[in-house]
Length: 296
Image (cartoon, rainbow, N blue to C red; front, top):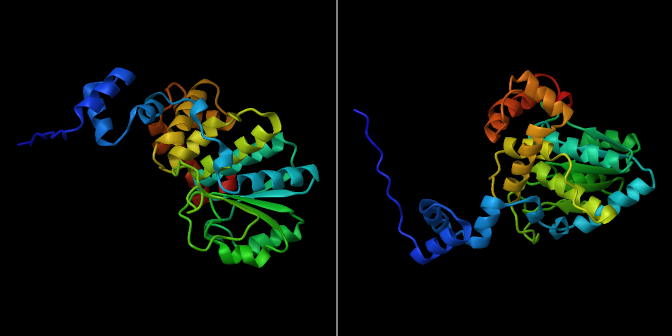
């Protein structure tokens, strides 16, 4: 005999429920759930109806102003930049977004993604020594670097480094030229849920704002792909980015994503976050396990 579930709905503030129903036009059950999660009208509106205009100022991230100045100076002096990424989908997409953006700015930029088996996750000293020998002026990490204090110490007098990461920040923060990570204890950025590609995207936004005075909104399909793949909470900016990214993925996707959709047999489907998580992202993750993530 199959047991039927009995739903027990928590009691909540009826007055606040009615305000949410009136202001947001939501179902009473939805209003009750929002109240029980301490979601007010403004936060609820962003959650249900959030748009790209609700994205936060990238310069609210600690060290963003320093990073922007250093990137601009490096580009103006035509010095080589290397993006140091990671081999999972978050790292691959973060590398792609920042590489494409810096190319747009005319930068002399390449990228480096470590080999999973021989090098492992994150920064490694041998790779950085190789980049220094090649004449690299600036290394920008994406989706890694926040825990690499001693590795950064070993090269900090010979190469400029910007760390962009989203992993939990340790007590010992690398002494790079700039460290952009919303999870640093002294970072005032309100949204603490960004993925690695989300942080890289905020760097692009800050650079574009400085250059044009406008929001940078290209490559949102790539940002959405990495955000969903990294299983970060789809709230706040993540929710807005994924919503806009899915719209782009379904209307005029990046060519590489389009071919990925085709080979996955999804070309006649409306792409959802489920398709990203269970069909598209695993194919990209496989590259780093079977051969090298640069293929992805």
